[in-house]
Image (cartoon, rainbow, N blue to C red; front, top):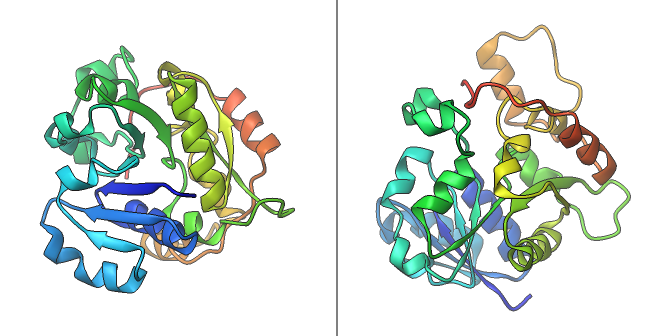
Length: 243
């Protein structure tokens, strides 16, 4: 693909995307809040296409994935991210992030808030609506009959095209859901958020056992037409999810 992918945040979603990227032959630059040395194990596991660096170094990649709690976005290297396409995987969870009045009032979406935080970057919402394990297990080559789709949203068409190309390389079709102002359609509590990708779920497991099942289930293919229908059926409710 000829693109270097930077990661600010290399946890469950970031690490999974990095794994898909290196498998596809894409070079990745990983970073986290604890320093490059703490990523040595992940880098060794991912192989020669991966290296660890600071957040500022990761921010200078061709495309940059931001995969941190929303409350940590205020600490992003905004200057280094200027001029970059930033892929926003974040979601608003008040129990974790604290309250954001502008989100609670639906003044903006979480991705619009990130765009305000990074005025020199171009933000595209993507990879936020699927559990990390299914993000890995459901990836398929182009043309596969059981290929899944994921929604994206953004204000810049060229940036969305670039992210759609990355999504294709990582194993997914892209469904354009519109501008950042409409990215709430793939946020927590919407029909396309996480649950469809699990498939049929057990109904008799207590909470901890259900979470363990979710972390291991292979998941269910959700094609483009189904994602489009789920996105179209969304109704905006109170912002933020609950653990």
